[in-house]
Amino acid sequence: MLPPLDEWDEAILTDVAGMDECRFLEKKASDKLRVGTNLEKTAARAELAKQVCAFSNAGLGYLVYGMPDTGGFDQGVPEILIGTQEAKAWVEYEIPKLVTPPVHGFQARFIHVPAVHDPGFGVLVVEVPLSDLRPHWVEDNQELAYIRTGEHSHPMTRQTFLDISSEDKGDAARFKIRAASPFSPSR
Image (cartoon, rainbow, N blue to C red):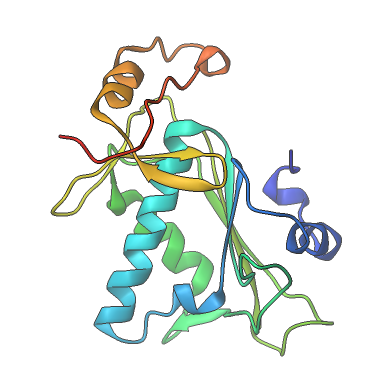
């Protein structure tokens, strides 16, 4: 498992860049956080919502922008994403509006790696905790719930949604996912 986000530095990012995606790690190329046009903003919000929803339903996880899932670093996320708004601030503003019920306790951190990134660019890491308010679903026209399984975030089956809904949330450590396979969005 990875250390808490406040302990992340260049060395940890270098280790993460060489790791495969897994239950607690999702890597995204920096272009997945592009928000210059309405189409880009919609796509960025949809991907952010899916990953935050999946981690908050399944367990602590890290979403890392600026690392393609094939490994290594890319050119990086711009620290200033829109006008004067920082990428970190944009993500922290958007997350509570993307899933229902709202996810709390997440945090984001921008980390510049001088050996890799030009000034003003870096990696944006979002730490998403397991939520006591789960199950969460994406607040859009489909209202899908997602869950993290292995290295992927999948639509949750109705049975898994019901199982999570009926779980005693008082002890998150006892929570076990009883997901049916294959994953299919059922309503």
